[in-house]
Image 1 (cartoon, rainbow, N blue to C red):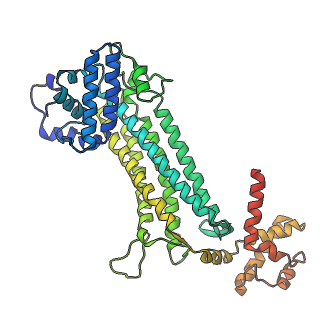
Image 2 (image 1 turned 120 degrees about the vertical axis):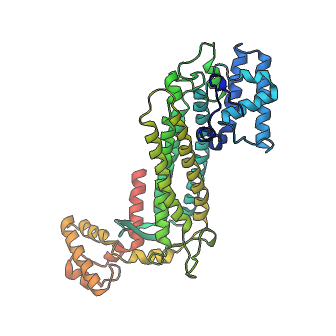
Image 3 (image 1 turned 180 degrees about the vertical axis):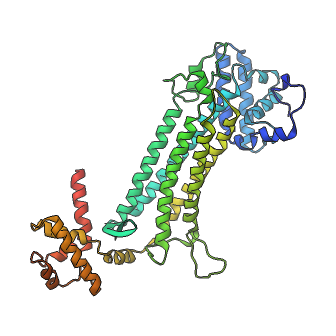
Length: 445
């Protein structure tokens, strides 16, 4: 394919340089956005009289036919093309002739790719938000079935206090809700201005209408980007990658818990066979590979974010070819997060919850010890004294293989006369959980 910028050069580009310089293999995914941006640009050029109206209409019709042919599989991307922008412009010129050569009037690939990338990430962030909403809905559906499923709550991975399984799941709902808010914020900032019209870096002498192209592409025109910043800004990629990295933190944390809960040491849940794998040598194994892969892929997305920061940190204004590397990093982060979210919700939806194992684990570990101490405080004892006495009772239970729910009242009374039979109501695990939930609901009210 002839290069559209070849006029200044006296010899062909080396083949290895062509391959090294080309981005068509990965930026072809922006074909919709490139055509969308070009249609808006051509519409503006015709409207303000920079090119004849009939040429503008021919360009738009030609671009629409290219989009249709790509979507239908009739037109394949040329691997010899330098990038998606050159491929579409060359194909347009091949189809409509001379008017196609006018499309790039008052435009550079610098403002073109900056626009395409924003349009692409705007669409992708909306898809990721929808996947997060599906995951939140799944977690809420499971939570509604487990208001009364008592389990141990942990700190330092040690049994700490009794909670219910719905509370544990709803903690992740809060995390994923913040993820949605972060993506929306990043999208809103990214959408504040349209780079088209900045051209290479310093704008254009043509009487373009930047607001018109901005409106056609759905950008806010509250901020008219300074031209150098328009073409060199990739903050939006870093912000989105940062939001995606935090999503992966949350997915990885929940994956870690799923992996633990599946183990024989916990056995709180069992994953469906459709979302598990086996061993090549050990016939008894049922491995939570989906959760493990998600936990591992989190590092990949963190690496993408780090790559973006390192790529951008030393670049002088305005556009530099280094920025081509931004695309692969942010694409990988987007693809990885979508892949993980698409498999996560159905994995959770099909898992089996072992309520009895959760309740049994909660009965061990003295996670109602704080409630025992609070019982004495409510009867007039200072908390530190109540804390010490309860600790002595726990040590005695460990020595005699008892728990606070079954320790005889006579032993309680030997430690403190304030104990009475109502201690069993106070340390009952269900009561411990429900009393805290009542207080939480009162605070919300």
